[in-house]
Length: 264
Ligand SMILES: [Zn+2]
Ligand SMILES: [Zn+2]
Image (cartoon, rainbow, N blue to C red; front, side, top):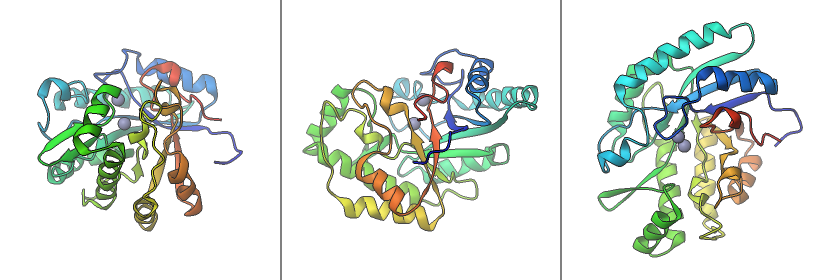
């Protein structure tokens, strides 16, 4: 997006992520220092706002409430330890789950004064009265597309949900940055689609812009075997540029070696 060297990674997970690695905070920070980064944010998944899918599956998506206290505490120690070398922010990646706005607001209010930087992401979409996670596997994505009547319908639901996320009232501590906004393309090599509902995408961007929100320019997609592109890509990325929406690079690292990855 620009020619300057990127010295901030705004999206990093931690040893507290149930689907991540056990790499310690120190390993992540050391990697950031090696790359010459000046600022990083640990954006661990905030605990989910309810039991809207099978509990066994949800357990793999985000840490639980009791664990998250330790995450914040350990980060305080890490921040102090590296204070001379790098700016480290305590953050969350907050899931927007349609219908759970009040519960999300409660969680944000509980931790808001500890959180310095955060991201609002959509991984789950609601179809009728059930919830589906869009980034589980190509097989699950395929089933969802079949249920909805085509890949394009999955994109429709995803972007409609993203629009709701942008507009949702989540209180004072609502994140200002929208996570990997084209995540629905995570399996695009298996389910290719050139999405044409530009009106919807443009509405999302306009709503982001008027709120002065930012976009997570997320490089994890490049490393996903069925994606091979950044989020956002294509028309969405063009709109981000056209409307001059601020972007913050994020590696979405779940392992120390991915910090600052593909920031070129
Ligand atoms: Zn994760
Ligand atoms: Zn995410």
